[in-house]
Image 1 (cartoon, rainbow, N blue to C red):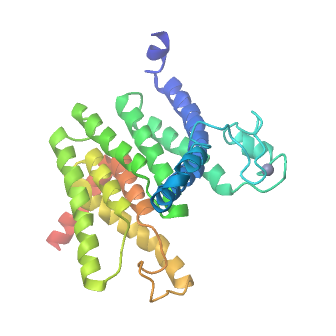
Image 2: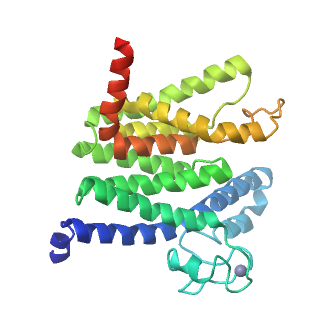
Image 3: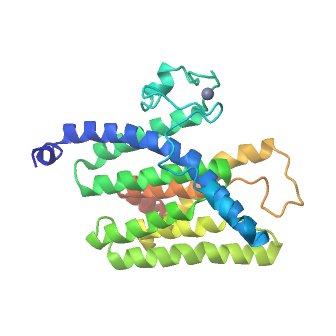
Length: 301
Ligand SMILES: [Zn+2]
């Protein structure tokens, strides 16, 4: 009980949030590395079961070899288990100067970036919202979005386990009206899913190409469940704007294969939806008057 009262003070809450950001960030690096590999193995084993049912037994055995909890952290190059010191968030990377202590292979900088971003979102949330359930909810929201962002950038994949987690948690938190009313959250989820689903099918009918992944519908539904239906256009606006800013230079640099069934050189939309959703949930109250002002002044002029 004493710890609980202590955490209601702004400074202890800020320090606690930064520590949690570092610990969760370390967990997230493991998650973004393992979850896509576990999913790929499961698809592989399902295909094998369909093709050759008699091998089911050994494949299932192989599929459970690695899970999120087992084995402990190891170097993906030499498979050598990490020491406790290497597992320290951020410090582990810096102490080893970004290399495996056993085989000296460089560890990708994106793992350090993910840990730093995890601390950054926790710190900014604690500073912006102060102690309380709303800040804790925003941190959980941000951490799941970070995992989705990194997995989608690397694998063009938004795992159902993470998008559904976000969807259900958004609906539950808004039962307490943390960000919007329960009914606005419900309609946000429905409108989020249906809007991108329609865009997907209209685009496919018109061009015969696939413009986005199905995971994008589920992510947008989850963002609707967190923010409510009314701000969905705002999220889409920020996502598209940041998408153009970041993707356009990349597309101009690369040659675009015209025969590809997937739109242009595959740049996933999920990360930009995640950015739009995060900005809306954390900075939405500050942004709204600005966006309204913009609409009002353009209406007058
Ligand atoms: Zn190694």
